[in-house]
Length: 376
Image (tube, rainbow, N blue to C red; front, side):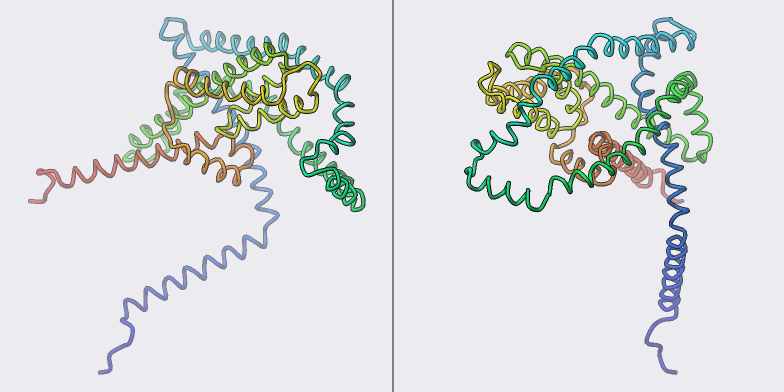
């Protein structure tokens, strides 16, 4: 009898994989045909995910305060929740009531006093300070004028900007409107929600999932609380230092330092650009020069990294800087600004997942190799 070139079991596996591949391609083809339907589904899901995720993140920040009050005997839950809510609302109101007018005043002064001077500098004075010489500047300016690059850019930018704002503002207003109510239910029934989620998990995995969820909550919550305090601390110090060195619009520039601090490593670079450009253009007006601004920001980053970080971020993410930088690029390309801001906690959560599964695998291996685990 002639021997088959391919064994029957191997042939069956090949046929099985081909069938699965063809079925997958058929499903993918069908999904592509209903692209608008899946986009509608994705938009609906994202409309739900944004407020739910935002409420969850804020709950991670506020719930430890509620638990702290309850440990001190301030209860029931409704009372501790009301106290935390009033404190949070009071802080937000205080910021807009005391700091908001100062920032608005600085922005108003900028457009009244310096905006025309800065635009005139870019249209005229920049030619003399152009690093490659005025001749090359004239050639570049002539090319820009002939090709109408700026006009084309603005004509394309404005409609896109209006469409983007319309798509962003409506969901944002919706989130702001429903977020307080959602947050109240989050915080009031925090443990009950976690219990309900655990109830849908198969019993044999319930303990592991609960342990993993607790670790993720601790990691993300520690980052958010620490980062919020860090932003306030470094922003306040920057504002005071900018005021002391005589920099105009120190509130606005200090606010930029605080907000951009949420972006690791790159935030400090972004924050120094506006005051350096302003100082370079207004040289001779009595304010500090760009070199002074750069030195001040280097000192601020030293203070943040060696004083504020160890004190405030008591639960360090403990990741190599290279991992964080790669995470910023990767998650930023996937999720845009959201991915850039939350690259560190996302990467830390992935590290927690990997560590968790390594521990479970190690426990399983130890169980299998223990003396009493062998079959009789």
